[in-house]
Figure (spheres, rainbow, N blue to C red):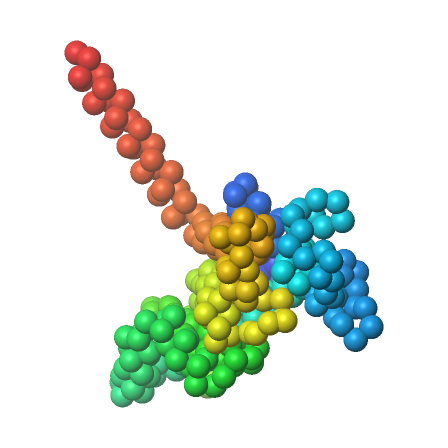
Amino acid sequence: MEAVKRTKKRSQIVEVWKRFRKNPIAMAGLGIIIGLFVLAAMADIIAPAQGLAPGYDVQNLMNARQFPGDGFIFGTDHLGRDIFARIAHGARVSLMVGFIVVTISMTVGVTLGSIAGFYGGIIDNVIMRLIDIVLAIPALLMAIAIAAALGPGLVNVMIAVGLNAIPSYARIVRAQVLQIREQEFVEAARSLGANDFRLIRKHILPNCMAPIIVEATMGMAMAIAVAAALSFIGVGLQPPVPEWGAMLSDARRFMLGGYWHMTLFPGLAIALVIFALNMIGDGLRDAFDPKLRSATVSKKRFEKIRRTIAMEAAKS
C-alpha cells in the first residue's frame, strides 16, 4: 500500500514538472534563480578575502567610482570596492533572507491555518481575528516599526519580514482545510481511529501543498523586496554588509554625479530575482492547476473569435 502511495505521489510530481517545463517564462525564471544560487555559492571564489577584509569589503580608493570596464565588469563604488563582487556576496544574503523568512512564516502560518480550519468555533474566531489585526496594518509599515524597535541586523530583519508573511499562509491553509475536512477519505480515516494530529498531518495538509508551494515562491520574492526596502531606508542590514538594498542606499548620493552604475546593478539584481520568483510562482500555479491554464487559453480563444466576428460584421 505504501509503495502504491509513493508511486502515485511520484507520478504526480512528474506530471507537475512536465506541465511546468512547457512554460518558457517559468523555465527562464528557474534558470535565473539557479544562476543566482551558483553565483552565491561561488562568491568566495569570485571575491576572496584579503587579510582581515572579507571579499566584499576590499577597498582601494585608487579605483574609486570606476565605470564598468576591464577588471571591474560592474565598476566600483565610492570606496573602490568591486560592485560585481558585492552583488555576488549580496546574493547569499538575499537568498538566505528569502528562504529563512519563507520557512519560518510558512511553518507558523500553516500551523495556525490548520488549527483554525480543522477545529473551527471559538478557536477559529480567535486565530482569524488576530490574523485580521495583523492584516489591518500595512505590511511595509509594520516591518519598519518592528525593525526599528528591534534594531538593525540580519535576524531582526527576518523577524520583521516574517511576521508580515504569516497571515497569507494562515488564510490559504484555513480555506483549504475547511473544504478538505468534510471529504469522505478524512471521515474514513477518523472512523479507523486516526487522531486529530494524524488527520491533519497525513490526510489534510498533503492535499493543501499546491497553493502553499505557490504562495511560498511568491512570498520569497516579497521577503527579498521588503528586506531590501528596510535596508534602503536604514533600518535593515547596515554597511559594509553587501545587501542589495543597502548598496542602493549607499550609492544614491552619487547618482547626480553621473555614477549610474553604482545604483543600476544592485537595482537590476533586486528586480531580476523578484521577476524570476514571480514567474516561477505563476508557472507552478498553472502546473498544479492545469484547468486554470485551460480556462485562460479558452477565454483568450473566445475573445479572438469574438473580435473576428465583430470585424466581419463591421465589414458587411
